[in-house]
Amino acid sequence: QVQLVESGGGSVQAGGSLRLSCQYSSNPITRKCMAWFRQAPGKEREGVAASFTGGMSTWYADSVKGRFTLSQDNDKNTLYPHMNSLKPADPAMYYCAASDSCPQSTWARSYVYNTWGQGPLVTVSS
Image (cartoon, rainbow, N blue to C red; front, side, top):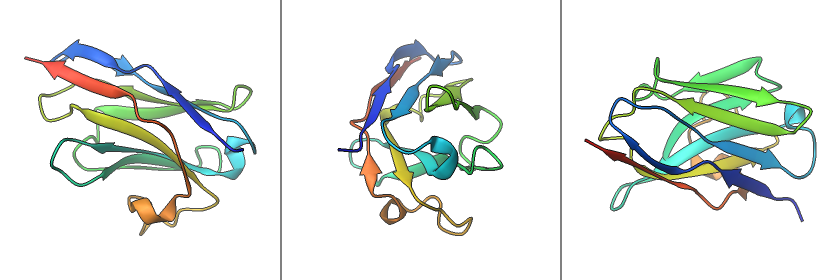
């Protein structure tokens, strides 16, 4: 069974940084579209960032552009979102997701992805 194993959630002060990780148990992530979504209580799930074909295509939501960056370790089959300058608007459950492909026009749509992680919680204190 294909799995996405996430880790790294926690609490951080506003302005601080946090790094999550998502390890994919099956095909190399260089062959997959890997993405991060987040969902706060009472809000819709929001696409945060995605990387396709080994980082050759990377997209970020406007709400995190300039603050979040994606990196990956292909040997560990792991994707890392580096979250900097965290704001009070950033707390949520953060979900890793995988798909065989993600066109630029739809990378932030949850229906594109067929495998999901369990979602580490990120909280930001002011």
